[in-house]
Image (cartoon, rainbow, N blue to C red; front, side, top):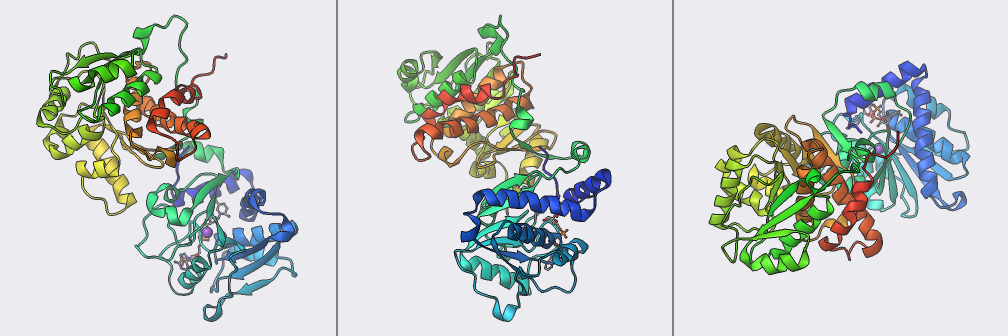
Length: 505
Ligand SMILES: NC(=O)C1=CN([C@@H]2O[C@H](COP(=O)(O)OP(=O)(O)OC[C@H]3O[C@@H](n4cnc5c(N)ncnc54)[C@H](OP(=O)(O)O)[C@@H]3O)[C@@H](O)[C@H]2O)[C@H](O)CC1
Ligand SMILES: [K+]
């Protein structure tokens, strides 16, 4: 699914209206109906629920007015509060005129905003994608009044005061919603950590925007959801053998962090690799052989950390980083790997920290290498980001410059590709914020890179999706607090199966 800018969303509206020969008010009615349908499923029975709809002067306010009418028709106790304004959009006027006379409507003056009971459900329809500057004056005061009320707020399209696809100055007035319900496609703002306190949980409801426009519009940002990835993992052929799926090498572990090697190895095997060899410091040999018997193990000469790069010829992909620490001889192993590897590489954790501490190594990165930093690791590779949008630009620039695939890990992990596209992963949950889940990702990505049937892009997207999906499936058994990284590998196969090409004509 593409992510559109606010300007492209307006074009999508216009294309839909043109192609279907409908009026803009009809499209607004569709949007309001979709919103109300979503809301009704979550509201208590009509008689018990007070709904306050706060409407701004544009089409977001128009959506609110239409939603107020529809909720009133369903029997909810609805009131409308209008933000004073000099002018209103045409469809706002249409929907203002359609409000039934018995539905209470008041213009909310800044001198005495009415109290908002915490029991009220507030529909925030003050501003949407047409926000052109940060809120101030009466609008900002109303947002602050609303946020102080601690009512349950559902924002239409975007929390009012939040730009849909650009940063707003720190401290701007923005509605803090419990839910945000957008139309057709999510806006970038909903995916960024800095906006989490405003967006709450978000949902997107379909309103039938022009399929032709959505297919043709150029985009550089995508949601990597099941629809985008379904069927992209080829099914296994009847006569496939272990050579078909590649032989992977993992360079992992150091004294006290052999577990990282174990987790990466388990995930690599569950990711479907044909053969796996793990190079660990001598201290990890017995541990690895006994916990992951399916893997071959190459013990390093050194007891505590990696000091030797194995002969690379047998391997279809190499992963390095989990638990390796940052000793100087390990840095030398990394440097030799970068200089000599012909197979695709996956670099994580201390391999990234070594790159950050020795930036000249970055110029040795083979094209299409996969790097999986979390924001702190990424900062060590680049510079501190001023905000999330800046971080995304740094990410895009880094991936372009080094011709690499870079995954910024977190909620909605973002992959930047060498040609400057951004893909936001849609799976996963907060249970993954636990030590070792990154090691699992490294192992899984190394397995998928060893599979020659997959492009680099598909390998990363499938790996990210399956990693998060494994956690989504696992929490049903473990609960969020109870999940440990070691639980994830055993759900990877199930997650991958969901993306496998169906066996049909
Ligand atoms: N496909 C869809 O997503 C659909 C979306 N719909 C809804 O339409 C809005 C976008 O509507 P639009 O009228 O473009 O914009 P807004 O309602 O957000 O606001 C525009 C008005 O607000 C004024 N404005 C802007 N910023 C400020 C500010 N900081 N302070 C005060 N006033 C402000 C603006 O005035 P200008 O001076 O900037 O001209 C406008 O008067 C979208 O979000 C959806 O909710 C459709 O209903 C259908 C499909
Ligand atoms: K809004």
